[in-house]
Image 1 (tube, one colour):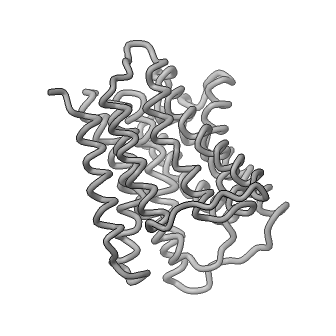
Image 2 (image 1 turned 180 degrees about the vertical axis):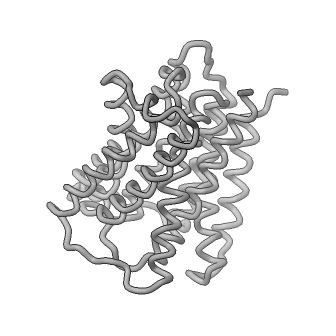
Length: 285
């Protein structure tokens, strides 16, 4: 597979993640770990069906333990740290700290064989980060409170987990993306345990909420992980890191189009900054 095609797969994952907030809002009051367990279960079914249809059976799941540790740690660890951060810190500050992962991907990619971290990659990442900052804070700024240090630490762990998973996946480029099926299955089990230990069960109550939940499992918390795996293993990882800042902007636009809020200048400015950041990161003169 060419680098361009793999990069497009990765961008496809970013586009799917832009629907995460909208579909989550439409899914009702399902607790986050319960929703995660349901979505990962759906993602597992998607992968299992693909494995059977390909004729490969479950051979791609036979991987050494470091691969499983990375895959399960990345998928479940990200969600665990993210939801723990939201429980222990204000959502705006926690969300922005967690969204340092695209910039960390750009920086960590310099450690990969055959990759170089160029000035344009860093500048593009920082410009994209400024766009994410604007869309998350709405220009109001941040007020970090030492009382929420644990929550901030969990948000930082969230960013470190997903960026490390994305970059280290490239070191296991020979592992087929079908192996993500197994990672999703284990993540579903772990999310189920987390749900019963931390939450009260609440199921969707309307057909629309069930459809939104199914949509999450099929897209942002399903197919997205498979095609992101292709992107980070074979695509332009610095460009994907910078382009990832488009997710919160597109997510906000999707919410606005669905009637969840009103359009402001922050959205337009953030979209411009994120686009500019991606252009700078991918510019080759």
